[in-house]
Length: 77
Image 1: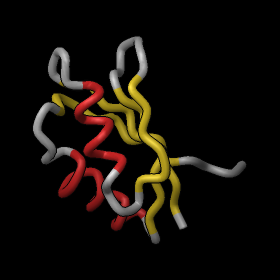
Image 2: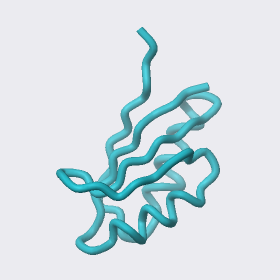
Image 3: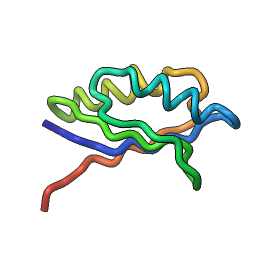
């Protein structure tokens, strides 16, 4: 199991809408609109790093209103 935080920059005024759409995706545990350099912070999980990549690239990045994402896998040191 791989977990990650996905930081999303949205188009102006789209944060709440994007967070709502992202919350409905399988593999997404939480999605919150926030202030700062990113507009939405997502906590997600997947079976492996390839499945996480598929979630981000094929499902999240294709949503309307998303300008950019940054994926931060969680590591246990």
